[in-house]
Image 1 (cartoon, rainbow, N blue to C red):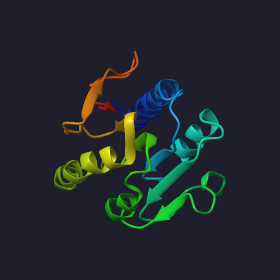
Image 2 (image 1 turned 60 degrees about the horizontal axis):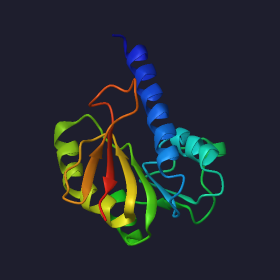
Image 3 (image 1 turned 180 degrees about the horizontal axis):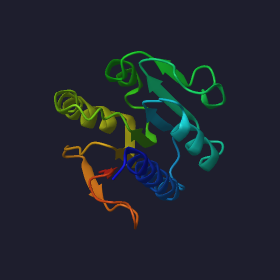
Length: 160
């Protein structure tokens, strides 16, 4: 498969997962957390599909398109592991973490700190969507929407 076809499959799966999650959290109050703003595409999609909900984005650098930058106070610059930890207890409805690098050593380290960080940000019943498989006693795996290949994304609900 060409890199272009692989990219198209990845972003289609991402869109389908985000749409699915937006429906799952429709009745939950609380903000959405975007770990890794990147170029702002998923932030923009969440903003469109979660009108009126606060979306707080974190990243090490600001590289988003100007139209996809969160308002002041909702973008936190710095190492995600440290900056997002300051928001523990925020009772988020959603944590979206598309921060995998495809470098085994870096992703192995992220798998250590991301699960407890996500649990600390989420309210009971909140959803975490990750490009990395996560393990934590408080995270219950959820099924992916139809058409999204397994291992492409991972969904979890925080236990009560």
